[in-house]
Length: 262
Length: 66
Image (tube, rainbow over all chains, first blue to last red; front, side, top):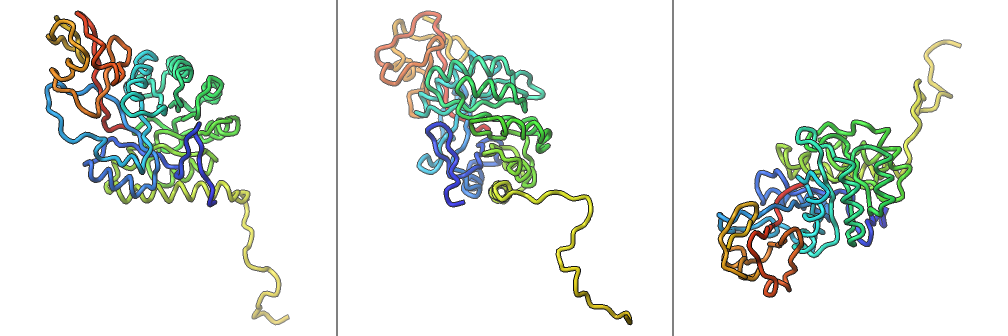
């Protein structure tokens, strides 16, 4: 367990929990939660600056880049074209080849548009990016993204921000069994047990935002998630016992004490 | 001349460089990146690449997200 490093392309992660920067009550709470999560990578989004509002402190002032690798996303993009431009701007801004590719198809479900995601992935891989695509829990789409050269695949556990936990553990298992690149469950984890369940399925890492940021105490939840990811990972590696329908005593059934006269 | 900056029309001097346009727009700082007509303008190109009538500029920054 001392060398359980996750490798994504040329990048190495010491923690299997990747956390977001959105929805925190304050930047200070976010920074504390990041520390409590033990994460070594955090996600950020890219947006147009507000030209009519003078700058103050920006998000990057609250992220210690010597401690956290930054994974920019293309959240909010509905087309491959917008996602590719966003990724290229992120690379210029942050000097990273990492991109969390997210091309959504619908504002209510925030489910990915597989066709646009595949198109963007192909272009970004060819442009030298380390592409981590957010995708549905679809083994075929995941395999296609892998074949295009994505460095990982990131199937959702449940809709973004829903906190519903792993809705389709069987698909996630199939995706993991067939993938040759890391599988990172992205979106839908609501509490520590959800995180442990996902990791016990054997996936390589989790990416979460709302589950931590919207907890009543985000810093405490970040710590809970850290431990849940470690617990789930270790349980997976340990190999769980088989389930049985009937009981199996843990204490010997021989040499029992008896008050009955023989 | 007019260019479209972050989706809105803005008046800029003729043949202004990208770097000078950022200064005029109050956006010349660390933590921003620029695209002109859907192509990223590298920092090293700020003083040579110019903005033309009708060009679209995107000036972006990192914000909180998941």
